[in-house]
Image (cartoon, rainbow, N blue to C red; front, side, top):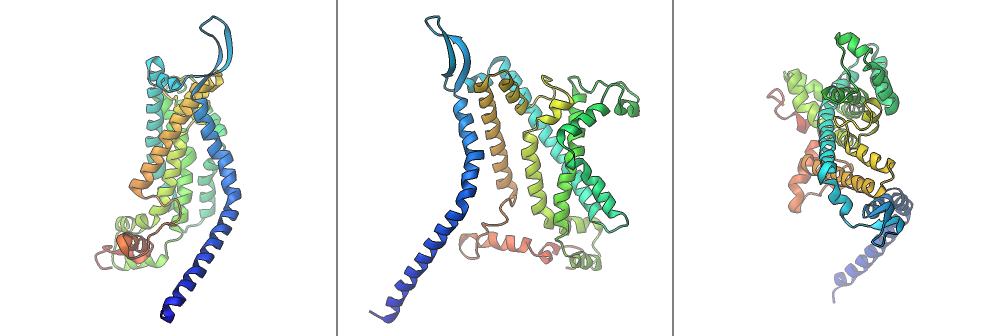
Length: 344
């Protein structure tokens, strides 16, 4: 047996012991975080799933005796969601939730990017502009809803400026519009803040090179700003989608409960729980959880939102080399400048 054949197993054994030691240390260091996540995330999800299979309250059994407590009903709480008047109310709330998510997030993204571009410019009084833009996001949602409720009163500022008498807090398009306006005003600065953080990582030399090559403002935005700020923008949009899918407090305070035009899935679950129907409330909550999870998974898979900081970037070679090279190119400013002005 040659000397090399003896040395290699020793190195492999040492390398294996090193991996085992670091893996054990990593498990010890991560265990407190995993325990906390299990208590505050996993346990409530499992408890809600279990509760959704039961119904609680007082009822009569087959012999006519009063029975109190929880009764196992299987999937009855889920089937009841999609049938009869309850089904109509559910699909209305589902439509409202999806409608608010799509419209609000699109408006907030457009306004947020515009705010970030304004805050990124160097001009006199920029600090004051930044502070004024971020103030709505710092206000608690309930306080913001009360503020807009005062604005949208019958004798409020909105009707005074419009010269009309619109009942914003009643069922109809005006209630939806009031929620959209209030939510966009409050949370567009959040997207603007994350996009601004992305803009500040772009070197100034990139813009100077594009300017020298004769790139227009639109070309610079499309070929440089947007590609390089895309990771931060996608994460901001993902956060806003997940948050808007769970919207509750803003329409509840601004318009009120039991308004079909603004009732969302979260409001349905709250209404069931407030009426001590905890089984149906847990079923609504779990359906919403599945909906949010599916939307988040689809968003990450289709648009490639980097929510883990490129922790799983593949190394060059093998089947993932092309994807790795694209990710590496996306991180280089000069790669985004190809085609700008036709000369870079």
